[in-house]
Image (tube, rainbow, N blue to C red):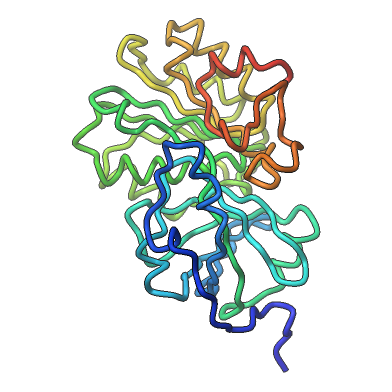
Length: 305
């Protein structure tokens, strides 16, 4: 007998008029328009590591699939009926309007319950919320994508954007570091990124194994493998906050301006709408004004990282 806790009962809902159009994400006043729930089915679940799974979601209503749009770096609120909701970065391509992909780590009450669901279960999402990486602004430049641990999850969306618009960018380097080889995410795409899209991937682990035949050390050691022109380079950094200071300080010493470095503070997200105030840094709501900030702004937000 199916577990009804994982099923959203189907019901007829009279949507407000604004729900029939795509929100203007550039207006703060539009934030309420993203607070509508989309009923979804889980169509596939891929185990990436012992702690992470990739969930593929399909929005049930065809009209809602058409109007749902997001940009690289944004996040959504994922609800598991009977358990609650959690903020999750979107890991899929912006051009894919059939499926959403969410990389989820088993960490708390809701995510632990999610790890017990199977394909066909129903969930709901709200959003998208927050700011995004300025992909158009980066066009014509070299791109440096730096991920630590689970930071590859939010980085996968801008990486997909670059893959689909490869002709707009010059050299693209991905620096990816984890503690152990077993924690590497999306390894099945590594060859595609390098061979098909000509993206140079550099991986490193802190603690190698007998089977590991690549670099060991800290992620900053990978800077020795690349040549950076600070005048024509943008950097996107995703990972644990402690990594931001180390990596961005290193980039600053290399001469990359702080307003060309972008970080995501998605780990501070809670309600996504500036209501609960749990993500506040000073007078800044990181869920509404972020989660994507240039590093100059982050340095001026006390205790942001």
